[in-house]
Image 1 (cartoon, one colour):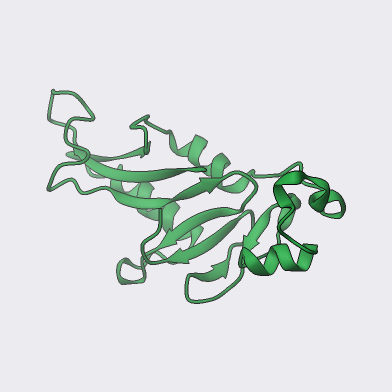
Image 2: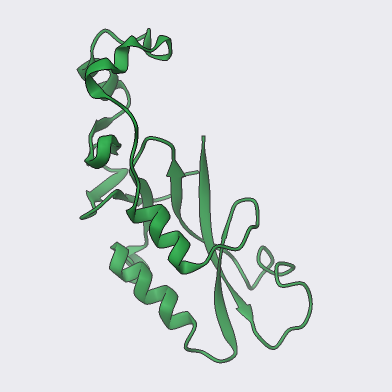
Length: 156
């Protein structure tokens, strides 16, 4: 289970409910990525928009705020507004209490014969701070410098 994060552009001149138009055209939310327990953050990339890295996302979000008529609103899938400082922590300050040497002692992992079997069946590798990290393939196009992976295409 995880939580998806989005950004939508809201017109500052409107006085109605600030969330009322986040999901309605022309305000189509842009998927930032997903936080899943025990995994590096899945940070969505949009090559067609020149958003290919964590720094590109920060630049994009900060530049939305410079337009006096609109502001980028970051929110999660439960429509809770998230401040940029909180989002950066969610992406970059991740860790897991997982212990690789005792992982298979948990009954949840009875279907795996070894740690390598678990990693292979989950398309994962060991990541920073005891997190799982996606293997680079057509889905995961790269690993960030920290606790995030770059994911291309649709996912939830």
